[in-house]
Length: 287
Image (cartoon, rainbow, N blue to C red; front, side):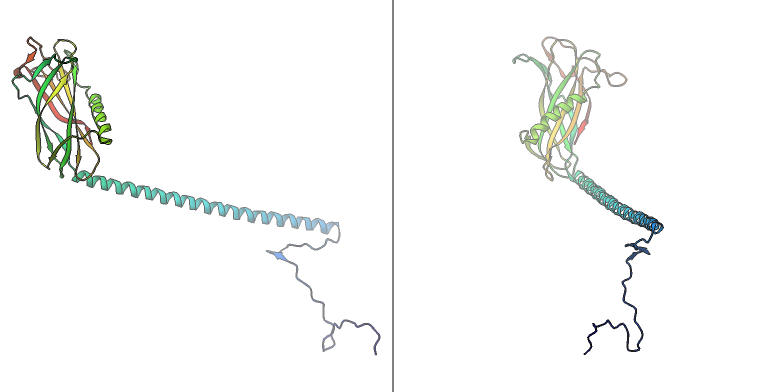
């Protein structure tokens, strides 16, 4: 019996000594991740340089990866913004086409004529507290659209002009009339006549327009109006502005800014041959 402790057999069957197995050091792109134990001061210095280079290299790789991530995020953001912009453009174009199709098929009401048919169409009304002049006119509106118009109404307002006063500044008054009616129409409190005006048809009616005159002096007037109606293909209220000038007979100034004034006599009734209606047209508000 052999009393010697068992010795490790490092030989093979050929009797040759075999080297002990070793693990290769971990590397990253040729750089050792775990440096060898330095043997002296010089070796430690070299290892520190290697570690610094490795840290710098890894930091650069991290920065590149971060930059790529930022670039990808920016690209994704730009792509998202471009998609949203394209979506908005497509929606805008679709709405434009829908609006154009609606405008092509809807009703369009406008003023065709205003006439003085009574022998004494202008008179002074002293029965009320306001004491205004009254003008009776016959007007005609035409539907030039492609669908019937319904719930038609026409609201008037007179702008009194003193002798030699300009007739050009009528638009703000018309806008005020239209805006007031539109507010009522949007809350269902401006229902007009129950007439149905067919495409190409006209509607004629008589109306009395109040002309507020504070002094008994010669005057002329701009009469502005607002036609409000609905169509049979949408529910929104639509409006057309109208205007005409009431004056004494005779030519206007060169630029249609001054018209002859109406002479007021006694009794306070003005016959038709002492009056003139001119500049009759649909103008201003169009919706």
